[in-house]
Image 1: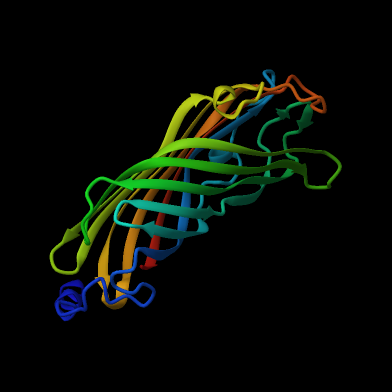
Image 2: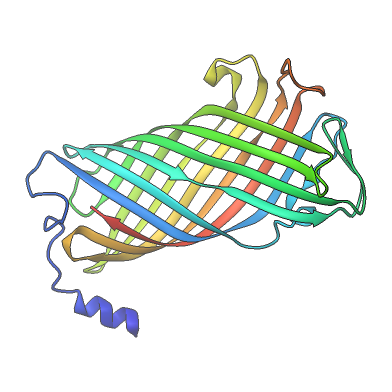
Length: 274
């Protein structure tokens, strides 16, 4: 009933051209999006070294809870068909556990009953270009390319600080992208987005690391288009993927093998100004 009342009250809302940011008829337009909510790890395993333990962050690493999350995106529409966006997604999960079994992380052994501090940081930045296939004021159907920059900070540290393992990595990941937006009634809308790829990483970023990787960031949202170019929406998102393979680093103690596969879900409230 509340939603129906709000929809009815907005039936006479000004058109989308009555924007706080963008004057009608201008060749370019800017947009800003922000979301706040929680992320729920559904599955997340990691292995350092071929003889290392396959560690389950959800079952054994205290990631079986909800973590706060935010997301920020800025966009530039050029003409009626081209859109460029910049996205920042922080993702830094820190937990503390008491080990139920011995584990081997690369060449470091952590013993059963030992307190362990864990950090799983995989924040990323992403630049995306989208080409509109269905240019219309209230509809979008676009496809394009993205370049994601991962920022990995992973660590296992004993509670007394005497033992530890850290892995830090920054690297580009190209991907395909698509976006859809459709009106629902007079003021509602439905949207969907997806960015993803599955490929041998060394052929994409020019490295000599023999790793197979995957990425999928996909979401659906529903919301209301408010006056002056503002939107509010509820978003359900899936973030998943990972990598597996051997990349021998001159400073690595072990064999250089790493395997990490993750499946995260997020639920967030968002707002847009466009």
